[in-house]
Length: 309
Image (cartoon, rainbow, N blue to C red):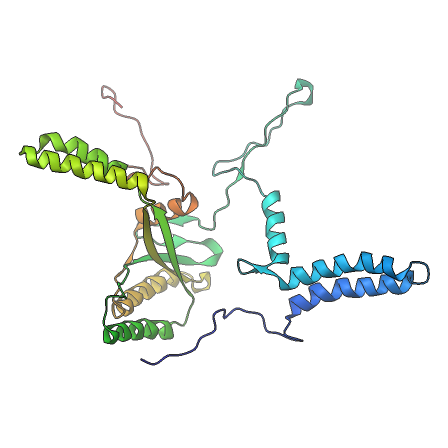
């Protein structure tokens, strides 16, 4: 099987001097020049040890911010991200936020109102097409996993070759997302307990009860995870009305090409796309979205008169 070396980070900045990028040189160079200029001005009046005590922490912090990395990010990027997080609103809502304030003569202190929720998407079609506004349209494909370890070397080589062929055929960006969600066994356990008394034989009822007890013990003793592989394709808004047709055609081509890698790719419809985005926004929410929920643009009416709601 042929092996091709690929860089681990294709978006890595190019080094310019001494293995440092332009960003690193700027982070280190500006404080160093400032310290050198201040030292040249203050040297006749301030002792050199005092200047060293003042300069070493500043230059050391700049070097650490430029060179030290955590979770794939430099310390300066982490500091900027932390600053943005502290300033950002922690509560958001999709409804209009009222602008009226409490009069000063009341003497009450209002709690902070939630900030508007600005989503990158504008609408989700019934066919699963996501309207991204000025960024175009996108579709999400659900890809099945492949048991690679149980395949023979020849089969593994064929799967890798099929996947490599699809990657080499890409002329536009594509994103693969591997997510893990907690699995809730409560609905299955409740369904077994509800159906067990109605089974036609006592042995079947005991087997259903034992299986429900096993699932309950499994849920308490293990952290069950469900792995989901998603693929996102996008077409830019510059293509106009052809963007939807383009991204749907790319999705069909991806499904056919990935079949050679042993995986089945299926385009998600509108309801499943909304469920995926909802679970991604609230991954720790234990309440799964129900199939009976109305869509975002559906008109909800009350029950006819004389009937129970």
